[in-house]
Image (cartoon, rainbow, N blue to C red; front, side, top):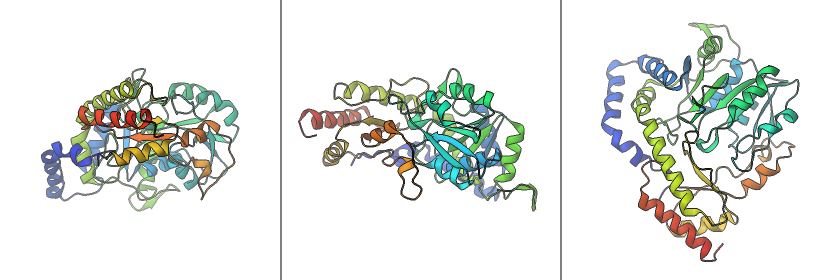
Length: 365
């Protein structure tokens, strides 16, 4: 079966370098918040062009701690989209705030900035802008709307490591940005990991305390809402190995999107926009009518597929909400994710394209 992602192929070429990095940590005997963590934080911040990076346990913790750094809690509202797997929604609920969902632009599948005036009010404390599928949202327009109103902007960059728009990298535009280093991400660890970045010294200081119990100094809890969320030294060392390769991997992902778009044109599917610097191809997601029949045919052809994401946040069973999101809801029934990872060969791409075309043009779906 051709997988959606092949981490063995992805990490294999770096095996020797990764083993040296792990050995370095083992020989040093320093496993939490040590020199590897400090070095990765400095290197990732420099790469992004921000003042600082605070590495944490995972991407959802990163979102939650970003909200806590802004003192967001019960009685506050946070605006975000409902088509991104409920990671932002989970963090918003965790701090006791209320998510207010806005619909998406049907072409980009990203937050529809024109809907922000109707979605915000005097309770709105922040907007979480999700750069979905590797594609940067118009975060500059969100900041231009939010800043005069005293609303903070948090970029959710879990799928957009290295994406660039108008000369600025994802994560460097808003007040804060959250990253995930889950193994399948464009920059992935070999376990869980995350980070929050900012150019605000005060927010960075709060984040460093909040990720470690709310300490203002050792064993002195001076901040409410703290937790234990720290990136371990082995994962930091691995991420340091991988960071120099990120731009090259992203370039290959863009080439994969372009080849898919050319090969799948004319099928009546909504394909992703042509990839530029603002798209790092984390996932290749199309909108295909009769999606489930297409998936079944691909499985029969030995090709894995997935759906990112099948249930919008406001329709999740545990936390249902009343919201009018017609574009989000229609899209959720049509989304189809095809294999996309830097080591995917042109021959494998052509295999996927041929199977999709046979499925549609052969009259099955």
